Image 1 (spheres, rainbow over the protein chains, first blue to last red):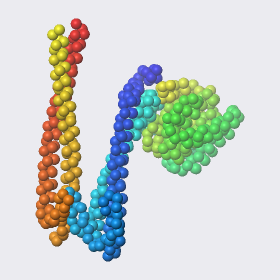
Image 2: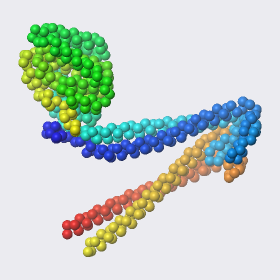
Image 3: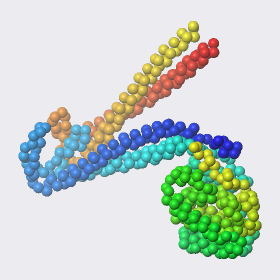
Image 4: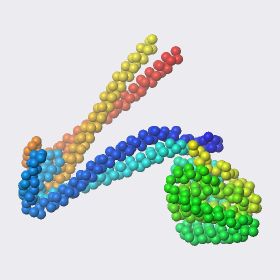
Length: 394
Length: 130
């Protein structure tokens, strides 16, 4: 089944074959044990540190009085009252059986030096434990991923390729959590720029909308302005087309999606959302997918998805519901490619620019242009959008 | 029948080698323990030397010998500790040398055992065919 999903090109290897589940778990357990040992050591040293500070306090208080009334330990169980004299004379164990006669002040100096040595030990232990914890979490993640039946998809990147390919290479990145290569990113960006230029030439009336989008690109943090402009556009477009189409339906859609996004953003785990998603229908998938990845910068991620819903509503005005789905899937094919790059700002910008392009294209098309849309988005069909969800073993 | 005798021979050889290997590994573990002890002592002595250096000339220094504290000259104590550090360092170096030696032996033994196992396997494979 996995091989079929790969479409013949590239390879699909289950993660479990590279890192057997029980092996990874064993490794994780071993690291956990090591962490436990280190923790014990650390506790021990910390106890020394507190003992040392207590001793420093005691020694610095001793010479305050000429003599102290104390209970002297005698044998194992007995004490008898006594008196501590010569309160400023201490015999300090330097180590290895060597003692030195010191005053209280000098003793405190020695003890503070020891305290410093202990502190450095604590620090090194902490660093050690931090490393081990990172290792442990890596093993845990690997084990759980292997247990889930996650697969690695490897595929050669071809320049002249459909958006579908982009989405697939993106899937690979998502699955493996490999850092997105810079050059690949640059290539996609240049392609986007080309598309944008074409659109600019083709359509002069839409220049305003494009400008809005681009201003948003320059200032991705200006959230409120951005949202307003988008909603304005959307309502304008809706009014202009109100004769041809039922206006209420896209509106309802527009309201529905932000709600969706809200709920999805709250869900913290990518895996759980992904699983939940597999049951939902496609446009929702695409949107929640973007919001899902952009969650790392929650504010901007939320904005971009808002803008995105705006574009959906617009395209819905001109095209039928069916073609809207396709427009969405086509944009979906391109969008996750940027999402996976951790550089959230440029990713957010480019996805914006692209949603703009989707909107404009649909305006240009005849009302029955669902075929044209799908061909422009180069064969990304709703039936075969994201291999990740399909591949996941049941 | 000759082949089975050869196999028995090889297996005996293998057993001997495995015993040697485990002995070597025990030695290495012991070596590590001793090394650890010496390293701790070295750290302690260095600490003592540092503190002794910080003491002024007239300070009284004692050495605990058995149950009694014996008064020592500061210079004498200093010299003693330095000598002790020297000794421990030399000992550590020696241990390092032996450890390396042991590890080399262990590796060669492992190789030999691996080869023996392969030979036994090939023998058995030949026997299965015949």
